[in-house]
Image 1: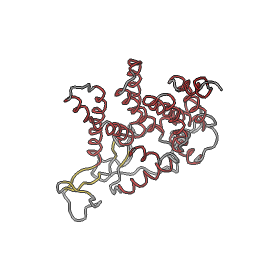
Image 2: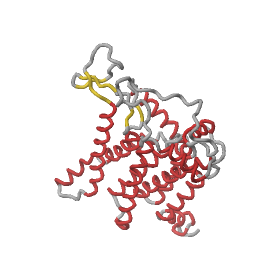
Image 3: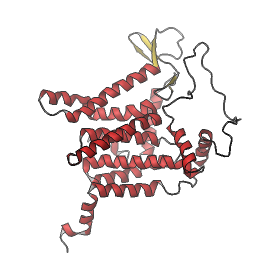
Length: 341
């Protein structure tokens, strides 16, 4: 029997432990799963086609022709011209899906496969960024294991192969986390290259996340998660008092400040304070300093949507975790275990 170091399995494990080879293996595996047969009928193909044709009409159809089934735009309240009830033409947040469908139609062909290809490419970048994030902390084999777990989740594979997709939000958020973690803990052997790649990931991830998911889902969630993981930058103060290096805590401090700024902008655009009075519609569910906190019900340029005046936070909370549970099956149960472990 050959020594353990010469065993084929041990040699293979040592080989894929090197990050360049592991990265190539991750790319091949992700591309093999996400890219083939994009033009075939999907699970939600009728809904996909309706959305795709509405956002990017087929090339043989006059885009200026009115659609008889399109509902008329809702008008705002009389005397309230600043309160938009529909998305403006120059909206930026949460417009990536429409732009991706149109880009796929014009660049890859006016077909189901051509329109889905941009989303599949975003899914491929998401998978590689997640694997790269794991490689930073655990090496090449950790990246491959992370990729296998990610590709086993329905929320990843299905979203990457559909036009009714939020894969752009996941892609931008993953790039943001990759960039922040890289700036906090760069590889000393590849310091300059690592810092450049981290900055590129941030520069690409921030606008991508905003255009895909808005300031709430696209920016606040990943940046806030990194800030929380870094204890909101508090270790920087501790290390500064003890005269230790604080450079590794700077990204967490920046993330904490950005989280506060983004949350403040969202609250400013979504809510306002009024004096409670009988018959206030909608009834105030929350109060502050004797003032009722009321949702405006107007278009928010940061959110990329209209926050419902009758905001049922419990419904949103339950629905969100239900989608997470189904989408991350069977690995979602490990999330709480990892958090408390």
